[in-house]
Length: 94
Image (cartoon, rainbow, N blue to C red; front, side):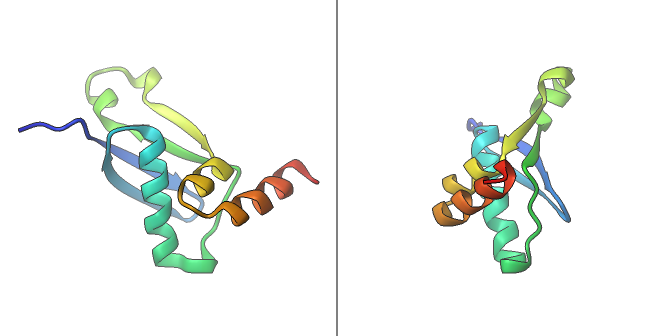
C-alpha cells in the first residue's frame, strides 16, 4: 500500500531532480548521485543543495518544507569522501 517515501524536489546549480525517498537527507544524496551519473566531472556544485519536501507542501506545511543541505555532507553520504574533503576546504578557504 503506502510506504514511508515522499516526493522531493532537489536542486543544485544547473540541475534539478524529483526523487521518492524517506527523508530530505536521503533525497539529496540520491539526487546528487543521479546528477553525478548524468554530468560526471562536469557537474556543478555549490555550498548547499536545496531540498523541498512536496508532501509537506501539499499538507500546507510550506514553512517546514525546504531545507538547505550541506554539499560536503551530501558528497560524503554518496561515498565521495575525498571530493567532500576537497570541497569543504574550498568552502572554508583553507
